[in-house]
Image 1 (cartoon, helix red, strand yellow):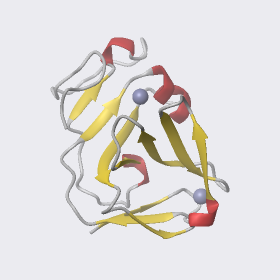
Image 2: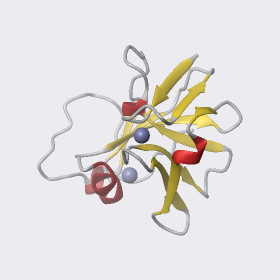
Image 3: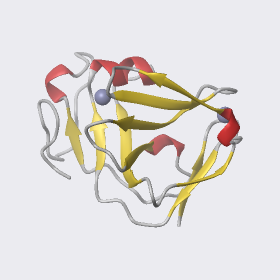
Image 4: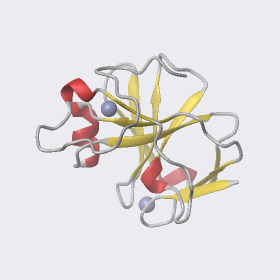
Amino acid sequence: MFTGSCLCNQVRFAFESRPTNVSVCHCSICRRTTGSAFGVYVKVSDVDLKLTDGADQLNSYNVTDKLSTRFCRVCGSTVFAQHADYPGFIYVTLGALAEGSDIRPTYHEFVGSKASWFDIQDSLPKFDEWSDGE
Ligand SMILES: [Zn+2]
Ligand SMILES: [Zn+2]
């Protein structure tokens, strides 16, 4: 069982299955959303993901007509993202997972538009735009 929460702990979630797809996304949208060099997302089946607390505190923002983010209305933490081209999945922000999680990123995407001030230091697979992985 993996668990996580927003910064103020009012939104809490859990999922059972060990994820195999954990993307580090360097696109300009993720830079704005996170205020940092990239976003890190754990791909979880929407059947597996359980919102265990704070459903009434979740707001959503339509970034594009296909992409939306969900964040805590109290503390502003982005906890999930969803994309219409990938139905059935929720992208959980890796930073929202509980301390001690051993889930690790598996690849980088949108490296072609990454921040000029950030250098990737690991040897994970890199994709210029969307990954071709599941
Ligand atoms: Zn919160
Ligand atoms: Zn992105």
